[in-house]
Amino acid sequence: MPKPLDPLSSSPMFDLRGRQSVRATFKLSQKAIDAIGLVALHMGIKQKSLFDHIIEDTGALEDLVQTIRLPQFKKIPRRQKTFVMSRRTIDALSTISQTYDMPRDALVEYAVQKLESVIQNEKIRHTERKKLAAEVMAHFEKGEQVYRSVVNTLGKDDPFCRHLARGIHAARKTAEDLQEFLQKSQVLEDF
Image 1 (cartoon, rainbow, N blue to C red):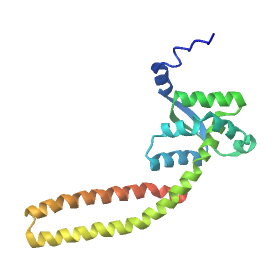
Image 2 (image 1 turned 90 degrees about the horizontal axis):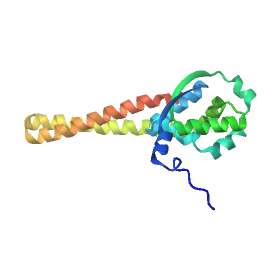
Image 3 (image 1 turned 90 degrees about the vertical axis):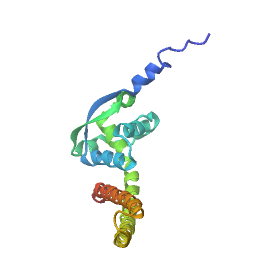
Image 4 (image 1 turned 180 degrees about the vertical axis):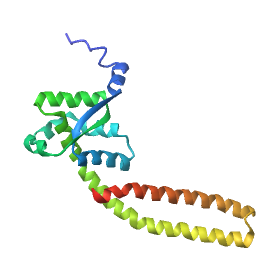
């Protein structure tokens, strides 16, 4: 006779409990802490979702355990940092930690190293973005020049100028947003 399903394990309430946010503190290298922030920023995702992605895959974590060299890990200068994670992610991390007698800090440190290829790709894209930004900004400046010329010809209160002004205002905002993004991205250059 088949074993009855556990009603709690398939209930929506159990699923929600797994998504519940909890705080967890780890001792990580500054490079790992920076990598987490960089990838979250550039992929436009929350750090919690990033942790879900890199840690909840227990198969990958089990493979990762084989690559961890504790004596080398213990030599890395680390500092405490608290992150928000889902309960499911913490549970997966704790299970692997206990099963393989491996510190959670080491598991997180080495799991974050998998992000380095993503960061290297972002670094390349950042270089391209900077090149393209100069071209885009020149285009915006040309639009500003055309607008000034139209205002000089028709006057600021002309309906044509008012419509054009809305477009110029949107372009200015876009230019500011692009500059702000590039400014935040400068940390990639030193990673």
